Structure formats: C-alpha cells, structure tokens
Image 1 (tube, rainbow over the protein chains, first blue to last red):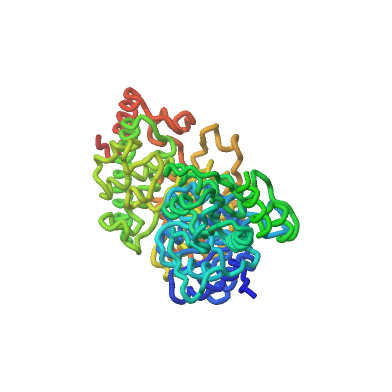
Image 2 (image 1 turned 120 degrees about the horizontal axis):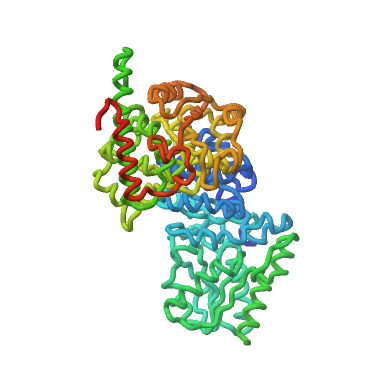
Length: 313
Length: 287
C-alpha cells in the first residue's frame, strides 16, 4: 500500500520542524490554523505565531511588514481566501518585493463537500500573473517537506498550494531533491502523449499512464511542482517527443498550468494538440472528494478516459 | 532632541517651522515640474512629516537599510511628494532628483516604491494597506526587543477601507506600542468632503473603542506635533493614534480646503502665486 498523506499535513509538520533551524521564520494564520495545519508551528513557537483572526487582507499586509523588517513569514489560509485578497498580495507583497510565503491550502474541488466557496480554483492563475511571484504545488508529502525547507531560505515572494485530501506518494524520500522550476519526469518516454500534471493530479496521471500502457499507448508523465517559473525547456523537450500534450490540474483550465504549458509551447513554436484537464470554465460543487474527482473526470479513470478519447480524435 | 529648557524647545520649533516652509516650497515646485500629483494632501501632511524626519525619527540617510532605523510608512501613498521633499532635504538623494518626479525611469514614482528608492519602506497607493504593513514591521520590532519604532500615516478618506479596521483591531491585540498611527485629517477626498462621501465621525471614539491610545492635535502646530509624538512613543502597552487636524492645501490660500486641489498640479501662473504667498509668510520673515 502506497504512503498516503495530505500535503497540508506534510506542510504543517515540516514548518514546525524548520522553526528551529530558521529562527527568522514566523507564521500567520486567519482562524484556520487547524485546517491549514500551521497549528503545529503555533504550539511549538507561540511567540512567532500570529493569529490574525478572520481578516485575511490585514494578515497578508502584516506578513509583508514582517518580511520587510527581515522576518520570513509563512502566511496561511485557504487558497480561495488568499486569492480574494489579491490587491493586498499585489501591492504589499509582490510590488514591495516582500519575502512572504503565501500558503493556500484546500486547493481544488478535491476538498469535497464544503463546495465551491471554499475551493481554491483560481489561485494559480491569479498568483502566476504577479511579477516575481513563484508558484509551487507539491505532489506529495516528500515534495512538500522539501519545498518548505527550500522556502525557508529562498529570497522573493512565493505561493505554496497544498491539499486537504491525502495524496499518494510519488517521490522517493531517500533521493528526492527539490529544485525550483525543475520538472520531475515520473514516467519517461511518452511518445503518444505526455501529461504535465501538478499537485493532487500527479499520482492520478501516473496511474492513467500505466493503464494506457496496458492498452498499447506510450504516455509519459512529468510532475510540474513549480508552475512559475515553469520549466519551459523540459515542457518543450517532452512535448516534441510526443504526438499530443495533456495537462492535469485541480484548478480552472484558464490561467493555470494548462495555460502556462500552452504559452510555453506556442512561444517555442511547438505545434501539438493540447488537452487541458481541470475545471472547464465551471464552478466546483459539494460532494465527496471521490465523487467530485470522478464527476469532473479528474481521477485516474477520468484522466485515462479523457486521454484515450483525445488520442483517438 | 530638545533639552528641558523652554528656550531650547522654542528654537527646535522654529528650526522645524523653517524646514517645513522650505519643504512646502519644494512640494509646489516639484509638482509644478511634474505637471501632475497631489498638492492638497502633501501640504496637509508636511508639518507632521517634517517633525518625523527632522526631529523624532531615528534615521541615518547614509544607511537607509540600517536594521534599527525607525520606519515611516505613508499609507496615503498619493501624498508621497511630502515624503520625497523631506527625504531629499535630509540627504537620502540629491534634490535634483525631485525634478524627475513621475517621469519614466525615475525612482520617484507617482506613488512610493521601496525597491526603487532606498528609504521608502513599502509600496503603497492602493489605500488601506500601509497600516497592516507598518503593523508587521512593529511586530518584527517587538520580536527583536523593541529595536525601532514604526510611524504610519493614513488619510481620512483612506479610513473608509475595511482593511484599516482589520488592523485597528489587531494592533491593540498585540500591544503594539512600537507603532504610532497618524491620521492626516484634512476632510477632503476626490469626490468631495469626507463627511459627505462617507462620514468618519466620531473618529476619536471609534479608535478609542478599538483600544488605541488616542490623541488629537492641530496638525500644523509643530510644538503640538512633537508633544504628541513623544507621548505616543512613551505610551506603553498600546499603539497610539494621533488625530492630526489639518487643512488640505495648507499654506497656499487658494488651495486650502479646495477639493479641486486634491490631485491637480499648479500651472505656471498658479505656481508663482503659490510661491509668492509662501515667501510672504515665511517663518522669521525670511523670503
């Protein structure tokens, strides 16, 4: 049985561990510490944790001030609520070049029954549009832990996207190294299609590639943990080896990974047909995570079916 | 810092009045050259800004990144000409640079930009944000053992932003006596009189209810400003909110209390008229 862990849990545990090694790390939350999992840090380092109440704009601005005075703040809420304070992120964080780590948990429809209002589905598009903002979405606990450690010493504003639901481990903890802006080839050699997947969709994409292999199709998978800066060189290289390109993300297909890949391929003059898996200009809904992922054809079976049909077209 | 004697305090006030006069002239000339900008709110703020930069803030213009410097965050970023002229006079950059205000490639952007001009602490201009940023800096100071003090200035129109009240709630929670907030209460905003656009009164009661130490002064009375800044700095356990009752366009009669001078630069004729008037009222009769 594969190891399963929510990336929000891995984030919370890693952050609490990093607190000792990085005394400048401080953490802010807006009444969701038990959900974003920043509470582990709060228990261990109460004087370096700021409970800002249900007032996210003020939290984001306060994080910017802490950063401008030399601290390394992790500023946590649901992805959708951080997106909602875009104006503050834009000016106080991005334009001020404040060394803030915005951590958006509860990414995507896979949070389940809380429904659309709590599902971060436009956050990557919004954050990606800001100059200098790195956008990171780890695919499992191993990657999350490495990304958190990286962010403790990285210079520049960054957005980290985590999941509520447990994700199957896809990386080997013994050998994994996080490199910002580097795609991780998990299933090499896709000649029929290559899937660029991110976050919770990565493990499903790997399962889909295996299933399609059984049907005689060669499908590669690359984990795009850094959506910005995108590993355009890897995207172009892998796309050129394949007949078709697929992106998979628990996010709107507009503005997220699918858009980033399309932009990189167009700019490089690589003509490949492209299937973007994600929410197709649609709102999320209530339901169990499994039901929702099946409904939007974003689980392993959904990806398998969508890629199979796409390659027939 | 003025000594205990009244004579010394008086000479300090006179020194600052002289600087404020010079800076008013600089504001008019700088905005006239730029051909756009916000004279009303710059002139209302300049006496407080003068007291901060030339008397009460712990600063070193040669070391704008000195970790223990006091911080000034101008949340009402459109009044940044007031800050630019003070910084130039203080020696952060050559006065010549003021001529580049609002031009392509200039570090003196239309609204403050920290990464282009050392000494500016944060980007502001989307109203309501600077107070939160100042609060973050004040928290950092507290974490490191009250290393520095943070001053923030907001506008009255700006106080209509919800984020101001989020910060109004959180700063007392953290007992941020490392933070002093100054309201440039000039009663004007783009669409009209502040009380018509969105009433702010009773403003002192509101901030008192949010658990701030509230002071109210004439924002053009140098001695009163110095007194309030000192009272704020020595007040422990709570952040201080200073209501600086000011006049929009202060010092230039045809700009005073005129909403039309919120965001319009004077033309050549108006500039000459304004400068002549300022000189006529120069402190100590100096022209």
